[in-house]
Image (tube, rainbow, N blue to C red; front, top):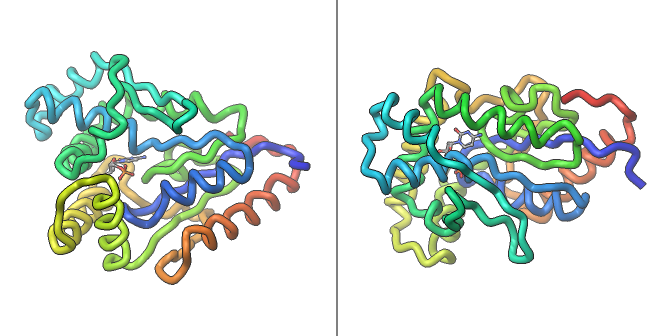
Length: 232
Ligand code: DC
């Protein structure tokens, strides 16, 4: 029996398997799974559809402030809604991913979403994945994982995932997109993708998702047993 429901932060580059692992860990522990990238993607989709220039920070920030983003847990998984409209599938388009990576460099966008994410934390029992969860959103999370894999494997996984979602692409194009997003997500000045000093580094290149889930669940159980030190 768990002694304490903790906060688990999973960060890493795109295609490292964060979503699969975070969802699997949440399921095993009976925790809430939160995909922070989906919130950034919801704003990216809005900007894309409204034809707002992603480089125009003021216009993006003004637009983002007018929309309401919700992650709703349903019988068929978490649904992402923007002003009530279900955008769960629409936010996965590769063009939206590129716009999202650009709008997420805007400080006002992060100032809008980070507090929303932090409000989910204090009770514990959550697994949140993203780029800045262990560094900015929950710097005192009991367990932080930095999940990565080789660039080639990440591009292949992203390509497979897109194919399953019915998105047309080529491996070469996906490789370039992953590379471009890595570069942007890691070099932006506000909350860049960084490994927190106290994060556990996990390279999933040669591991299956199930194996990674196993490692994280084991670490989480140890932290749960460590006692009532609520750090968030
Ligand atoms: O995890 P993802 O691929 O769905 O994320 C989409 C984009 O959102 C990614 O390019 C960077 C951004 N993002 C971010 O800046 N901070 C987060 N915590 C999560 C995602």
